[in-house]
Length: 295
Image 1: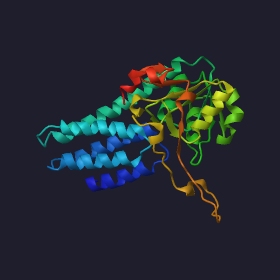
Image 2: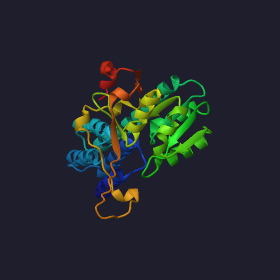
Image 3: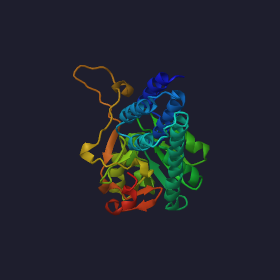
């Protein structure tokens, strides 16, 4: 596959993916960049061509901070790459591989910190699916239970339920509309995040804020677990909430009716009991300089 194919097909893949979470898409973006520079080989335009591809990747998913942050960190290596053209592709690909490994390690470390705060036989309610949430259940199984939402419109909760079934985690699968009915059966609510904003508010799959509100009303702690790569300097009023094709809703075509399919919502920091990253947990985001340092 040549560089034009890698760029064209890679951008389409990242832009249209509805199954993988933000961290997974960030790692996939880095893998695409590694493939791109290896294929680009010795061309004198390597630096600027790779920079252009990286910028396009960052623009594909504006609601997902790790795509922005990890690709931006990789872009910094373009200014440090060896002058020798024979060495540059290997160096740049190695930088991408290193960031991929750091991201994977951060997922496991964040999940480990979360599990340390879970008592045996805890029932966790969650919404949507992320690599961090799956890792929490992998580490905690089978001593926890789960309540998993369907996560409309494409029902990524189904894949999470399959994952939990394979781990022998007792799981209740519900529609998003049943969150309030089942929140009382949970000991704790835990979600991943696509982006943690500068004030501690959280951008995640639409419905996350409803879960947080239900948890607050029921007195159930609500935690956000993610890597520090997901921290952003963006404020809530600046956040971009991606809207996808309304056809995903399978709504009837009716006169005077407009279907909307906004994929993300913002959960205010005041509804979050604690933020967990690979650096540990904090209950006060304003004092969490160790978290902000990762943005």
